[in-house]
Image (cartoon, rainbow, N blue to C red; front, side, top):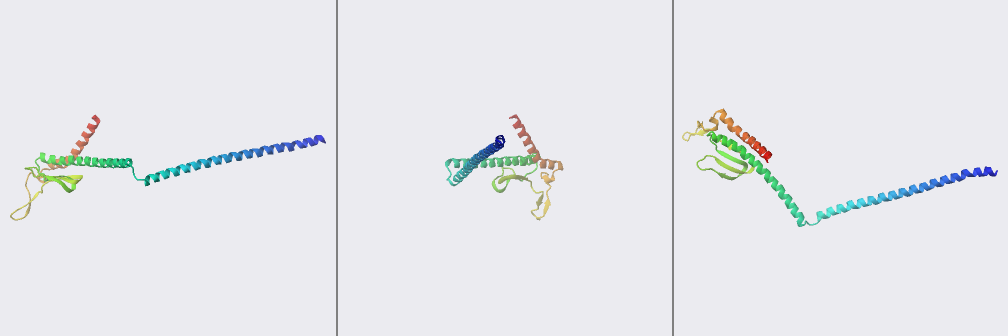
Length: 205
């Protein structure tokens, strides 16, 4: 009987030990989860606080009056943009001058009369006519183009007032097709030569 009781008592002890181990494991896991959760909330609070501080700093920078350093930086940035715009307009104006100069030189080298040589559009800034020349040179406000104008191929009779075609051989309209083609294509040829020389100069440098 005593032996049976002792054997019957052993399972109860082992079951008590296992339940005690399980309970200890649960306590440890709960403690670990609590520490992990605490660390997570601490990190989240620190991150939120950092973001709030950075936003407040940005707002204070916007509200605060500009310092001499910020004014200097803003002025320098505006000056750089203005310089870039002026440089772009200068390059465009130079290309236009080369293009129109091609038309003008091709006409004058063939003895063809030119009435106007204009750079730009809009209001007139500068205009002059050289001595013993019928060509009027004009500089206008917007350097976005230009033109070379030729005299009209018609003339008006002073006595009768009737309009008739001029027979002047130095007019563009009275020249052969080849001469007119040279004048018309000279602007494009001048720009191609400019591009070629620009590339050649940049490669050599």
